[in-house]
Image (tube, rainbow, N blue to C red; front, side, top):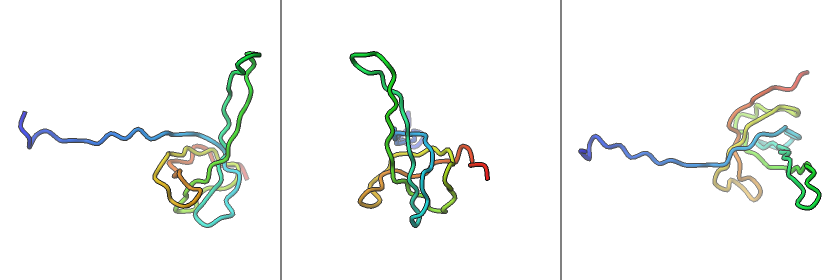
Length: 93
């Protein structure tokens, strides 16, 4: 193969998560609650764990109750390490 025809592409495998917007009261930042189900090691019952993520929302499109997809990125501030990828479902009302 020729070096001119071969195009190098950098593949990045960033983590993506889906969750609900809890708050949008900050400037260009939303808080997204991601809930996941985990099997308990001893009792084998599924337990829900949730965690809040600070997400960068450049255009400030999100509102509370929206279902969004977020993607991992470089550190943007002290607490922000995630960016908004898409709004999957807008909240009613």
